[in-house]
Length: 274
Image 1: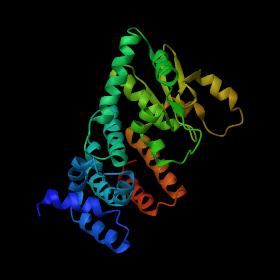
Image 2: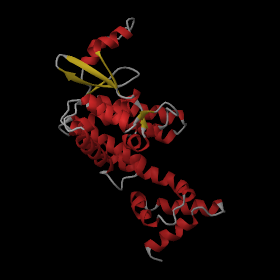
Image 3: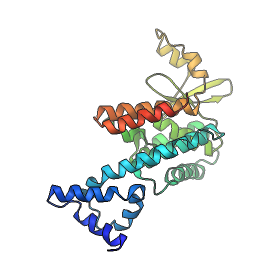
Image 4: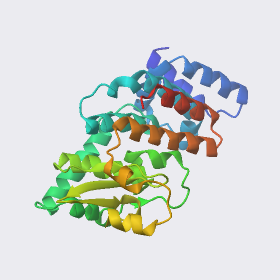
């Protein structure tokens, strides 16, 4: 039996009524290693949702191996936005598969190009309105601890994500347009920011792209022991930002009792520079 014929046969039997047969099939599929995802892609006509759910643990095991191997690939990139984009692409591929490493960057390209068609002379606030009002990419206010809410590709496709996820989409699309949008690493609620003349304008991507000034934030938190001014003025590095993304993933996998992925992302966090 040829490799292709054998794989077709294995996929057909993966949801067999017998648990013994299913277990043997999973063992066989494990032998394909990290090439399995690409090899089964040609059998989309027989890959029912039930079959895919049974194969998924094998796929995720392989994706962990690939992500671990590729994780450090962004550490030595020169530009901060390039580091962020590469790291976020890897996170996206972990959830969606590594068959298309360009899907997330292509979405960033598409959003920036569409914005230019609509707002040729638009500024950073126009971009926030476009992404979070017109495109309706919203804050995930339900099922907050879904790990996919840390995935920017999911946020673009499903129109919802965590504050940091939406801010990073804004930062990267803005970068394509020549905007100098940075992160603002506030505890508990990540914001984006940009300089406008003498003022720093803060953008709350989670809440529809609402914007405000530094004084507005300090006035709303008069008793805070946190030095808001220093946090607002500091530009967090790509490493700082991605460590926060990883911590969100660790928390999400802990919340849903996924011990394997909790440990995996905890290990990635240890490998990521401060």
